Image (cartoon, rainbow, N blue to C red; front, side, top):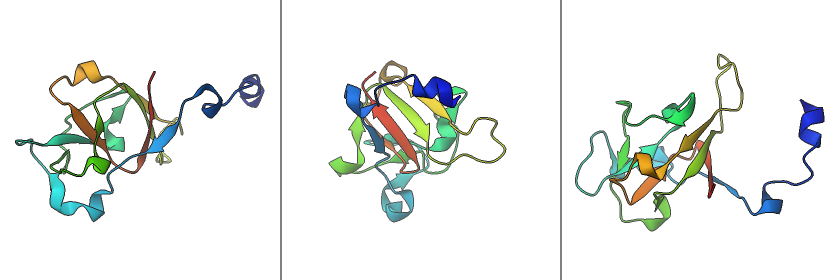
Length: 123
């Protein structure tokens, strides 16, 4: 595997791609978390929403929505690659990614990501 990886001569930043940390620290923002969708709510994506390379939402998990005017906790509904920052020992692959496609969630202009996932914009 290392031999294959070393064939790449450029890194993600070299080609203009940045990985960012999810925006919402859920335990610090409990007052904006919601269990059900309501007026003004945007989806909050967690690592549990990443399943077999895709994003599944909703999954009937607690706090899947946020209601806030804080722009720093929201991001545009665009195409992303979500990456789990932490995986369990039981998972066969330590790197778990899921493709988020804006067309799958056209009802939202904004979304949010929990800070235990990373995301890459613009593919």
